[in-house]
Amino acid sequence: MLRTRTYILAATALAAALTLSACAGGTAGTNGGGSSDTSNAPSASAANAADVTFAQMMIPHHEQAVEMSEDILAKDGVDQRVVDLATQIKAAQDPEIKQLKTWLTSWGADEGMSGMDHGTTGMMSDDDMMALRDASGAEADKLFLEQMTLHHEGAIAMAQTELDAGENADAKAMAQAIVTSQTAEIQVMKDLLATL
Image 1 (cartoon, rainbow, N blue to C red):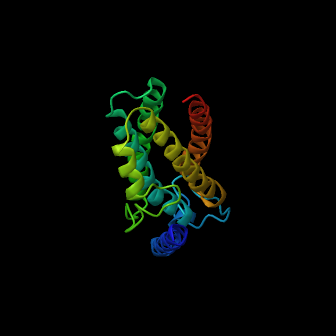
Image 2 (cartoon, helix red, strand yellow; image 1 turned 120 degrees about the vertical axis):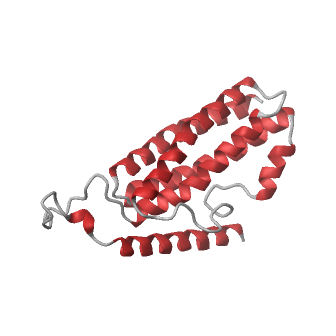
Image 3 (cartoon, rainbow, N blue to C red; image 1 turned 90 degrees about the vertical axis):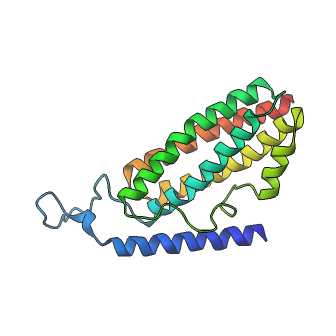
């Protein structure tokens, strides 16, 4: 059921992004003189449907990771290594959320999509989030690490789609940074889980 909902929401997101892209017109292919650029090279600020979808889906995804990090940081008795990791995740993703929102504004695209907060790849359900809020001590450490590993895997998949299909150089650079940093964090989380 969750997987079906995820696919439906992803398809809806892609359809919305394609619509936005079609409505935006073809201004990215003009040069400074106003004439058509026959090289077909996108400008640095050009964005296609994949770029828009990446930003729209990554915002709620990052927001949930920040929320999960804040939940674990608010608890007493959390392993210091988990505290350090949660602090690192929050510090990395907060500014990325702001940047993604700025891009969407500059691209003339809506910031969010209805329903994306619970179905995006790697997103935790309301029950998952409640379980993390209710957990304490070593149980909270373990649950945070397990959930964030799945969450990061979803972000990496979304970032890889941007690398494969996006056109905006800055968005692709962020996507590559997400793949690199979150792959490393997944390994840290797996190593931590093995010691708890």
